[in-house]
Image 1 (cartoon, rainbow, N blue to C red):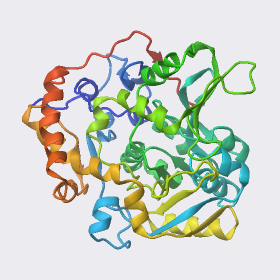
Image 2 (cartoon, rainbow, N blue to C red):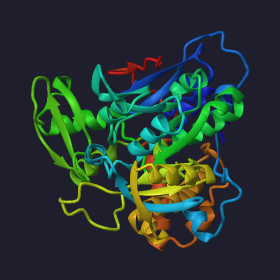
Image 3 (cartoon, rainbow, N blue to C red):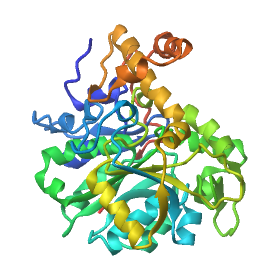
Length: 422
């Protein structure tokens, strides 16, 4: 079995999930590039790269620890499946504009606004539409409610929030961080290596997420509906109601050029997710302080302006949610845990399937991520027989048919360098 001995091995064996933590930990030697058909990946630019191995130590694709951060939160079979739960609510942002613009009730944006305005935090590290390239994303540290609202809503294209961790480390006060589950794992590794960063992280937020498609996905969807990607000025994937629409707008236009429902757009985009996503187990933000997402247990009726499930994973997370409720930032009521399971059942099936996918990957002599505390076997056991066959035999077939057993050489055509946030 090939060993992961350097950063290029992580990319070549299709383990990289594009979080950007390596570029934060070693900005002198590591740069990020958005490879059009693969995603954001690191490129080691300097031949003088030393042997410190910090780029591997920080990489969540090399090692990820899902052991609960807060040992005081009770553990049971449900939390083995969904991660720790210190509190669970459903509701929405109290601010009607945030609720409308958010993908599912705006709770995440409202909680972030609370952290800045009332929680004593310097800013919020997150991603949003790249102002120079609307089909791509860029990382930023927002300091105001207005900056948060401007980029509210989901983005189904590559993102690397961890490449902005230097902004948090250098901030004069603690900051909040919003990232995909895989990015929050990168944050956890990074803060273990950088004590000053650890001191500057006030709270981590995540969201229910099946991980991001490549830029090719968005480009292809736009072309499918007859829109030239280079002419797009503003691109919304969701929001402006629940669950919202894929809605590209052209320069000088006040109305979207076209609209696709969320189910239509995601059904197309998800096929462009890279191989590494299929081996990533966490879709619900298990090791964040707070995670939010769609309450799909209730089908959207086209009239509901949006609501969210909010899950506190730690005591710190619960305290922030409760304080935000008291301050009027979010309108939430306690929710039953079954609503989480029914809303995101596909994420649990995937988590269990990852055990079988990893088995098939190892049988083919390929490396896998070292996972701790993920409880994959617990989630694998109750899967239906057809799901287990799909996870193992199906993975073996894909590895062979797609030649996954060969090292990946990302195609430089249409690749774009990611500018480090300042």
